[in-house]
Length: 396
Image (cartoon, rainbow, N blue to C red; front, side, top):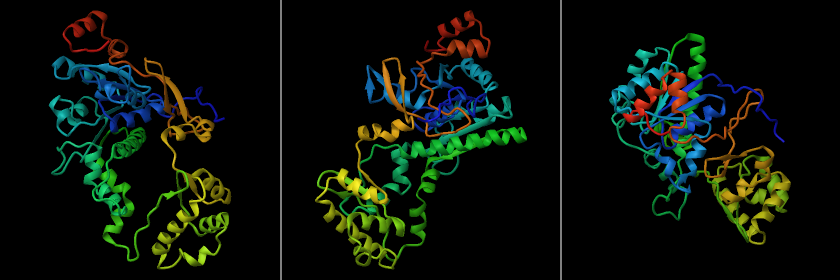
């Protein structure tokens, strides 16, 4: 069993983040910070983050919201009112980080842009994530992950390696969001470290397009220096039942694969260390599929894995969630989102000497108004009641 860390202090304990984010990229970045012990105050707009009601839903509640926002406190202040903006600025004075993922210009409209915030708290770390970044001719364009996937070259790169495709594949993934979130989180923690040494705040500007260009390292360089003999492609192999993927990347991997399937002669038939590497690779994949027709994907996995070469069956999401490896590492936790238990992946940020884990608290909309506005800012109950009546403070 993995070592329990619940008695330890998280590496970001004592860090307070005012989180203006919604949807995926911003919320996941601050969720990761919560996993490391930071106090995340999620400031939601009137009605709350739209992902609260997005699919898949259980009893009207969006399950993705729970996974992206676990461990955060929720308040709601109407920032279209002068009193609301004043409350937010007062709160910022007590925070270390401000994080937002709106289009450039939105925060300035509220009087909460970097310059305005820095004037109130000079050492603030102010982070933004958006489609195209804070500068340049495309900066103010609206963009979500599918737009960035298309604009970055990623979708056409995938189409180029699949001969059967006549147009880019359908997609519903949020790769650009999650990758941008991890880059933002890294930049924020680096800025916190720098502030400890210099006392200076930071302005962080994460462009999802920049992130995807960095992710597409092979494609970025191959565009400039085209390969003469083809492009390496990992090809799914169809078995008698199911599919599997092999990755004999090194000479030893290749030797182990051929030994496991009893085909040592294929080393000469499909030479992978020559200029004809990619032609040989395609031939190897065809030969592997012919070999696999006599085995299920599970049988093939056992045979090849026993020899030491990398392989996996293609698993459904449910199968992957129930892998023994997931259970052994404590990679899944049970939380309660107010509608019952919900399975969620534990944090991928594992640290031995500090507490790192998904915090299973799922806040209701505006649940922590009294704690934050009353406790942290010192507002009296009659003042909070007046602000609620005036609809400056919303939710619970």
